[in-house]
Image (cartoon, rainbow, N blue to C red):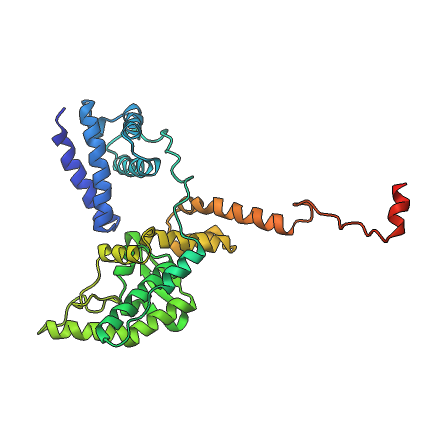
Length: 329
């Protein structure tokens, strides 16, 4: 069969995701990539997206596994395929969803990598501020604020780069975040993050904004209101933020700080519903990856506080106590 027959359908689905679902371009591209991979697999089986069967879908998952694709990536691809067939079903283009009885790979049982609390403390404390040169100090203050915000709010890197100054509510200790699908949420911030952002706004960002105004004549940049600016006064890219975090800790990434935020909250007793709201997960099932952390914390608390959770050592007998000798006879 000709795989070109899938292209108009995929384009139409992308328009649906972008216009009706309101998903961001990067998200739409990710879905399109997953569906293109599935369509190429179907082509090898002489099948099309409209005629795919349950056997095609399970065969696709087997194909991914034999080619070394991990369960998390396979689960994401299956989720993309499910969304596509749900759209076809709701639009009355098909009468049966071939993914309906397909079991998802057990992807969410793997706990995302996170840093320990001492590692995060060391990472955030390592950003020493440069003395003297105002340009170096401005970028240091900016970098410190970025790291504090990523960890304090558990923000996605795309959410951080999209922040504007008007999104801040530092008097109330919070920030207004736009997440996936343009869903908005209020994220509370701790004292350290608020202090770092306030210092950056007072002593760092004005210098970067002045550099931008000197280099740009005429109208102001349309993105000049972005919270975090480069040395050229332009918004920072996701790749630049990734490099910043990597420079602070070679084993970390922006997503590592997001997972570390959630993990440490659960370890300190936060419930999963609260963590879901903080991270902006649409479904609680995504947050349930941290259930293992909660159970580990519960076991630790149980061992520490339950009277029969650990062996109780009897105090050594007092050799001067005559009752001991009597009882032993």
